[in-house]
Each structure stands twice: as C-alpha cells, then as structure tokens.
Image 1 (tube, helix red, strand yellow):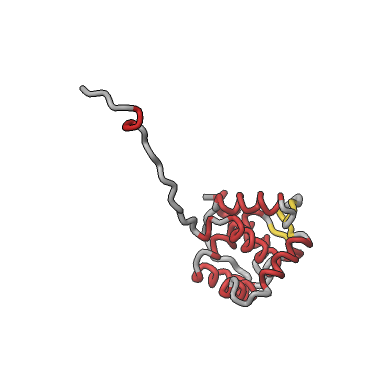
Image 2 (tube, one colour):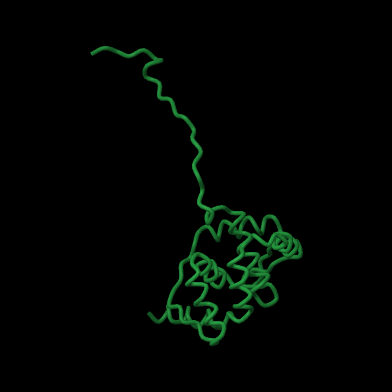
Length: 156
C-alpha cells in the first residue's frame, strides 16, 4: 500500500448557500405572532396554545378558514393542531427584543411590538392573505374555545 501525502489526504469543504424556508425564519415568525397579537387577540394577549393554533392555521388557507368559521359560530371544530418549535424560538427572540412580554397566562405585545407590526403593515404587500383572514377572525377565537378543545386532549 502506498501512503498518500498530507496534501492528498486533505478533505476540502465548500460552503454553499442553503435556503431557509420562510416559515423557519425567526423574523417572519415574529411578524406573524405580532400580527396575531395585534389583530386577533383581546388586549394584545394570548396563551401559548392559542399562539400555536394560529401558527398552525397560518400555514394553510383552509386552516385559517376553519378559524374564520369558528369565529362566526363561536365553536372551535379543530381536534388538534401542531406545536412548532419555530414558534418557541421566535417567542424567545421577540421577548429578548422587547416586542412581546411574558404574562402570568402567556404573552402580550408591547408598545415596541405594536410599533414594529404597524410599520410592517404600512406596506400593503406584506401578509396580504393573513391580514384579511385575521381581520375576519377578529378577536372571536377566545381562550375559552382553545381550552375546551385542549380539555378534550386530556380525556383522550
């Protein structure tokens, strides 16, 4: 067997750009959460399960439509939704940047967070579908509705 020289045994790695899905970009997720707190939450407050519900719904228009229907009928007909680790990361960053603050029951948008999302909403091309559907939902997906569904999880 022939031994290779040091320069021949060396592995070379070339860094290539790797796209990050929009849904995994912290700033995008922070903006979504701020939008939910600003447009569809009473007092700009929400529990973590409710934020996860909205995050899950924002991934597909048909899911958001379920929330629109639930807001109209005052009954949430969603048996379960996903809990996304990207939301936890976005929340940590948003708290660190003082865009939201923790409360005894969940999270609340701060004045800085309201200014941030208001500035983002000045551009009519951002979050077009989300904006319209969240306005249709309004503040009618209550914590009680979310709790009722979650109680069903415990029984199962």
